[in-house]
Length: 409
Image (tube, rainbow, N blue to C red; front, side, top):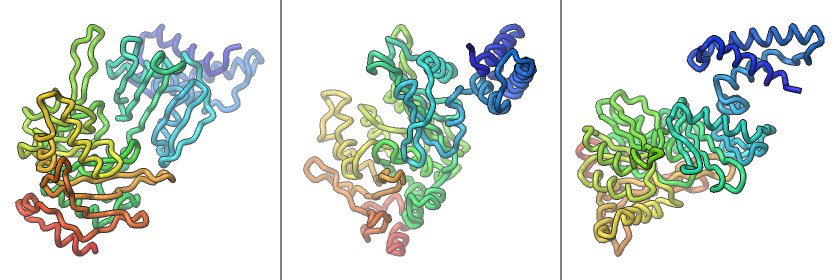
């Protein structure tokens, strides 16, 4: 026997088809249609022709979510405490709260998972099929969805939804959350004001994008910011901002827009500050060339430490071609990157800034040495007494980081 929710949902869909309207454009209309059908169903149930509804409001909310939202996943998407949702199989669904994962008592079926994914991807114009078994896209609220399908996965569709967090708009909020100390936040604020090139490093889910967004919200309003990402994740309040994202190739294999292409195009858009959401491959070369031309910028990178981040950034550009060698790349990294801020995710789920280092600008062998400015001591970020080796950018903007770093000790 068909469930009450499925029956009410189908009746609303039938009415929508008859009247030729789109409930996705009007949430209040969807709620009214659903209330009408719930009332009709309850009247029939009182006559004994259908099972009674225990909670009419809950049923109505679930039907509305199915019709206009993302069905059974909508309550998790609406829950502000949940950071990420992932589906390993229709009956194995997990969420993360404050960095800690837990399995939720929810079971879908394979067809429902496919319908939810198709609904999420529809506004983006992106697709997932046998010819393109991976997809990475942004939902309307800024959350990111990543999907992998068989035969890349062994049996079931794998779905990850990383929710967009709107609560962190600047470094002060990170101080409130205990992710960074006030003195370290003040130093980073000075670094942003002075136009330093900042590399944010860390593992997956360590808070790199959140920190990058917080830093960007400290940029002076007069500056024009151009952001370049695989999929939109950064959200800025700055009045003069242009956000660019990559595009997958069409079914014919044409129309792809890569990060490398976007970085080159962004330089024609008069940026005062260039931001690359994350460097993973050969686009690191284009970023370094842009930063080496005097354009202030920021980016993030996966790494286990600040030192590893500099090593990785010195290696990725070599993927751009055989004519690129470390003799060019390593000195360019040393001369272009002013600060590395490393993020960590602790076992209990707490995200924090673990270290801040400043490359000296020199090269020793094939490595880029740096001065440690802040380090973690018993989980607390403290100044080391070290000072940035290069102070020209600070001086040009009339700020002296030595006063702040010495006062923090």
